[in-house]
Image (cartoon, rainbow over all chains, first blue to last red; front, side):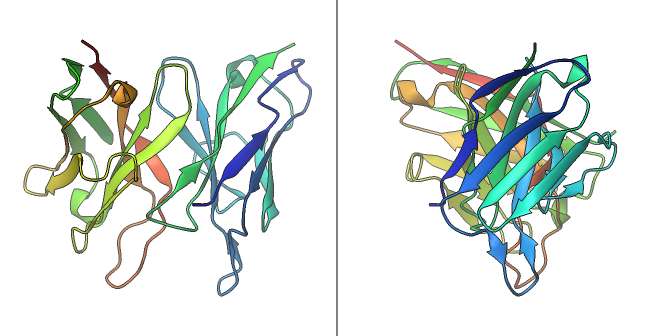
Length: 114
Length: 126
């Protein structure tokens, strides 16, 4: 199985500042034939199900604010929140789907307000 | 309204069984693979099982293989998960999740999840 490792496990950022979450896969999740990275990001607020933010490593889901962006390729990926809002407090997960149907999630990163 | 609504969770003794259901609405159920993802209390997300739309093929995490059975009734737009031989470590909220891309014949598919239900809690305890 591909192991997804997120860093840090938790972070605290001031309102209006940039938040950066990293995700590393144990092997490449870049499919050479279509040059796509098989990575998604989710946001989970307390008491709620996860919500899809980004897929194909950098494509924002419809309705997701543009302060959320995804980047990276191969084995190293980043979720960036350009200007943290109070409503962004949540746990964030990356997920690889390169080995569909055996997909795997990162362990999660808890984001709080400093 | 596009939604998934799970039901069937509860408290059960070790070794017991439950049947979880997920009612889908607002999209063409027959076009999408469907999955179950669970989350133990205070823990992260764990993929459990998935079923394709085109050929009904089923897939399981090693941790549940041989104990859980996923199925779907396309006439009722409903996904199921039969959970048997339950263990304490199966205690979790079980989410139903829709794949973001429709199934295509002969294609492996890409399983990221664009729609989630609110989950149903399964507690295994004596």
